[in-house]
Image (cartoon, rainbow, N blue to C red):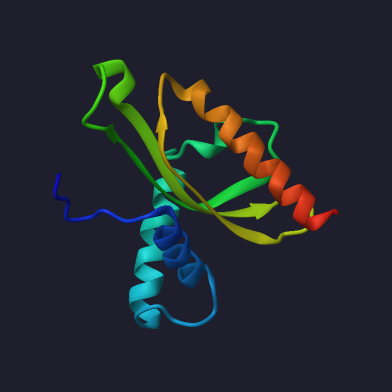
Length: 127
């Protein structure tokens, strides 16, 4: 099915990495405006990855998608996606995290994803 905003996880991660970095993606004011919108999304709790209070990172900026795939039953069709710039709590190191089209039963169904990201960050920082 055609889409106007379709992108892969890799493309989304690249976009968010540019936004999180020092080199401008478009230009300074445009980048700041986009980061401001993504920060407001976190402030309004439009996030999935921070539903797990045991993770060692905090969300700085986030963009979520809740939608459906076009196959299976309605319950099987519900999926969630998120792209986020996060900061590891003890070091202040920033990371970009992205997941796409994860089956979504309820908010708790995202918890294992946040735990995988948390463990990957810890393994990277503290090998």
